[in-house]
Amino acid sequence: MRIATWNVNSIKARLPHVLDFLAGAKPDVLLLQELKCQTEDFPRLEIEAAGYRAVAAGQKSYNGVAVLARGPIEVLADRLPGSRDDPQARYLEARIDGVRVASIYLPNGNPIDSDKFAYKLAWFERLERHAAHLLESGEPVVLAGDYNVIPGPDDVYDPADWVNDALWRIESRNALRRILWRGYVDAFRVLNPLPHQYTFWDYQAGRWQRNEGIRIDHMLLSPQAADRLVASGIDRGPRGREKASDHTPVWCELATPAP
DNA sequence: ATGACTCGCAACGCGAGA
Image (cartoon, rainbow, N blue to C red; front, side, top):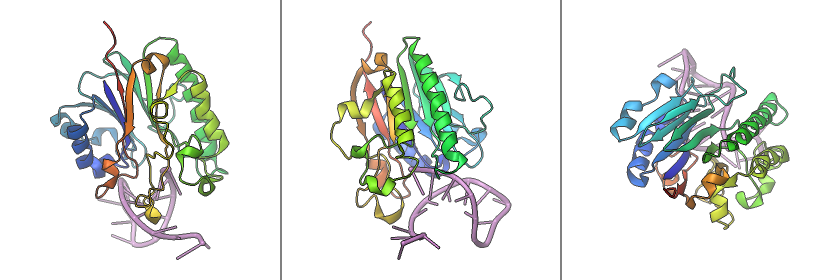
């Protein structure tokens, strides 16, 4: 089972790229973030015509997440538990072929002296609590998406550029580490020890051309999912296209469980 | 270098992103 995650920075602007990715990479599951459209405006028919089912949790203008899959999608939550009144569409959880997956768009949190940073950290705490709860089922769990956190110095072209940024601040990095301490595995990093592998390059200042990026899109696997992990990578292709998203897809492959 | 680029919006510049 191949699962990919991609912050598309507007599903309407990126639909041709998404359809090309589905046709080329042929993932079994694709988790999308930053749809920037309302749920009813999600281009479900075009996705279905490409052979995928789709469920979206959107809102006007901002945020929005979706789950696409070749097979049936059993929706389990369209908000992160513990934030039922949260108007921001940042979490969608589903069961697909016996694997619990969540499409996650964690708040950016900048600037750090605003309530946005507090919101990010509070959201992270709720995610950690829910991630811990999910371990109790023993079901394989994949929590994947745009975490808006640079885990460490190997995941950024120059940490000095990110001092006092919400993506690099120690509070954000520790919040991510706390989920790992619970027993989750960073699927990409555990199989790809090479430093400076990025998933995001800013549109500005020629960051893509100079390969000055950051790794902020992550796939966190529960132990039962990590036991089946056979491969993981970053697909840089979509980032090099015309009218690209500033993020590029990350994927992992889970072996079929023994019968 | 308070820069740069790309989205949605009911806009004709702004907020948000990271």
